[in-house]
Image (cartoon, rainbow, N blue to C red; front, side, top):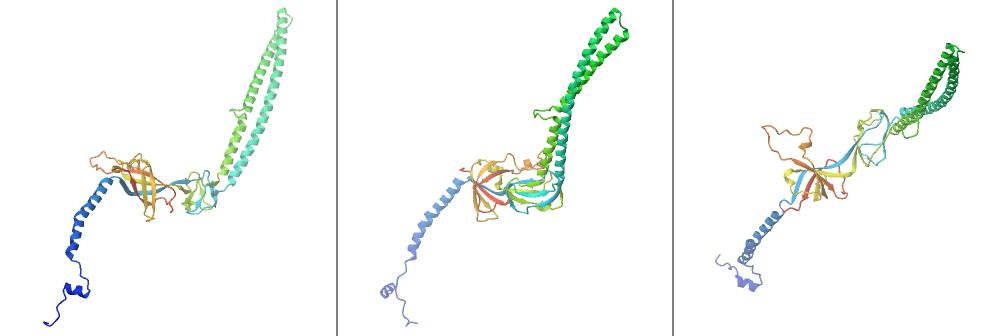
Length: 357
């Protein structure tokens, strides 16, 4: 071991062409100022950022996609004879959804047309009766004129003693009968005139107006046997639509989700509303689409908390009351058309930039 060659020194390494390592002391001397000044500066910058932006952004994950849902029910009852849609089928406004048996309503329309024809015949008959009543009145007036003249003669003859009391009484009776006949004719003419005349400003006799209204109702009921989509959307809950089933009027038969009217309903804590205003920008994220970010704006702020409009509002007038932070629904309008389908009920994360510092 004593004969072993000693390690070459730095001078020998330089002579041999071997690089010499930098001293670690110099390296430590460069890192120390960076840690002493850079780290506190970084902490100060981060702290300043959070200080300036604290309260500017408010967020919640208690938010959901909402769409208008139309409950479609037939206006007339009857047996379903055709179903033209399937579950989750997209339809346009005016597309036929299903049909109800139209035969009973076609028969009702034919009956209404027959009633209208009968009413017109009845009005024509009444018009004839009105003309006949006018002729009867003219005849009764002529008879009254003759009866009055006869009464005058009999009265003069009675004064001279050339006639009997019976003849004078008969002439008096004829005058009264003629006047009664005129009154009866006038009443019949007035009644016929009222029946022929109209009760409103349409100019049609009342009987014809009634028949026309019944026919219009029958035509409308026949048209309503074909149920059409009132708007563009997606059909849902079609399980109740089965050919052969009797569907009552006014009872929902299916639902239509209006897909072109989509918004987000976010339920924010009441303590987050201090700086929130309508029109502020919002960023939306969706659990169903992790990589999708959509922008929107605050469209409206609810007029009441969720509990205020619940079926059973909270009753706090008791000794066991515990204060609970309330949530207020805020409607967020989505900017443009998102690249992915917006399904009603999707869970959403909402962040609103209030601009507050």
